[in-house]
Length: 180
Ligand SMILES: C[S@@+](CC[C@H](N)C(=O)[O-])C[C@H]1O[C@@H](n2cnc3c(N)ncnc32)[C@H](O)[C@@H]1O
Image 1 (cartoon, rainbow, N blue to C red):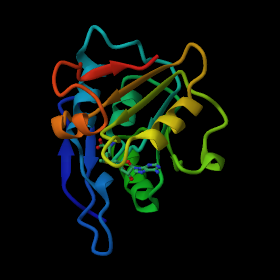
Image 2: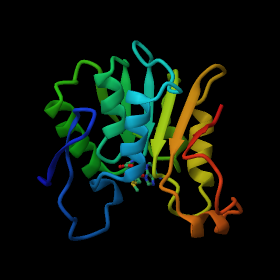
Image 3: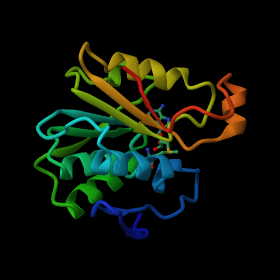
C-alpha cells in the first residue's frame, strides 16, 4: 500500500497508494478537485468558517479535503469511502498529520443506505466523485446527509465532454458550486 508522499500547499501530508494489481482504485491518488477544494477552504474569502464544525467527506480517497479541514480546526471530521483499502490509506494519512483526535474514517457506500451516518454534519464535502454514470447515486447519498442549515461543497475536475453527456453547459459554470 505504501506509495508516494506529498505535502499539499496547505501543509497536509498525504501518502498516495501504490497501483493496485487486481482492480483500479481511483481514490488511491490525489485528484485535482480535492486539491482545489482544499485550497478553497484554506484561502478563499468565499469559504465558510470551519473551526469547531462537524464535517463529512464523501468518496474521500486519500482523505485530503477532510484532513485539510481537520488541520484548520474542524471537528469531528469523518472521511469516508466504500473501499476497505482506502480506509487503511486514510488512517495512515490521519496519523501522518497527527489528526487522530479530530479526524476518523468511516466506511460509507453511497449505494447502501444502511452504511449512511446517523449523525448529520454541519458541512459535507466531496471532490471528483462525479466520474461514473449520471451521479444520481452520489447525489442521493449527499442529500441523505444534509440537514436544514448544513452546507455542501462539491468540486469536480471540469470535463467538458462529461458535462454535455449529463446535460450541463460545456462552459461557464463555476468550479465551486454551493449546493445548499
Ligand atoms: C476519483 S476518486 C476521488 C478521490 C478523492 N475525493 C480525491 O478527489 O482525491 C473517487 C472516489 O469515490 C469513491 N467512490 C466511488 N463509488 C463510491 C461509492 N459507491 N461509495 C463511496 N465511495 C465511492 C472511490 O472509492 C474513490 O475514492
